[in-house]
Each structure stands twice: as structure tokens, then as C-alpha cells.
Length: 103
Image (cartoon, rainbow, N blue to C red; front, top):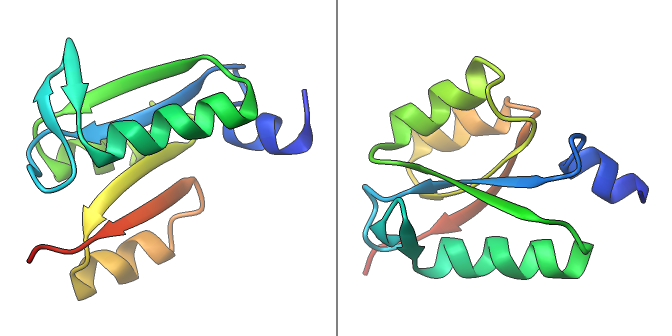
């Protein structure tokens, strides 16, 4: 396991948080999620040669709680850019973020 793999997936599985409550970045159901967040997670797992587990939430706050309570090793997430979220997420060390903008 490379250093990057070990850092992003210490259990050997890349787990990605999918916020289905944000239709700009994710859509579908927990059994069949889609959208840009899912595409990014799949591509990252492919490039890192890691299995992928998509963990779906219906609201950003639930995703945040999973990271805060350490139910996720590393959380790869997408979120709309809002100043209070950017500050909060910038202080979180176990998160890799992808910002999305609504048009």
C-alpha cells in the first residue's frame, strides 16, 4: 500500500460520502447513486487501485456527523461553497473536499 493509499484508505477501502440531498452534485438512491461526486469518487478509487464504498446521506449535516464521530476513516465529499462551511471544513483534518457551485 502506498502512502497516499494508506492516508486516504487506512482500512484498505476508499469510503466516499455522497450527499444525495444536494442534487447539483449527487442524485439517485443509496443503492444506485450518481452524479459528479460519485464520478469523482470512482475515478479516485480507480487511480489509487482501491475498492470503493459509497456511503450515502440525505443531508450534509449527517455526512458531517459521520466524519466528526469518526465513523469514516477519511471522508471525500462534495459541498456547495458557503463561507461558514468552508471555515468549518478547513479545520477538519479528515476531509478531502470538492466544492460545487450552483448556477
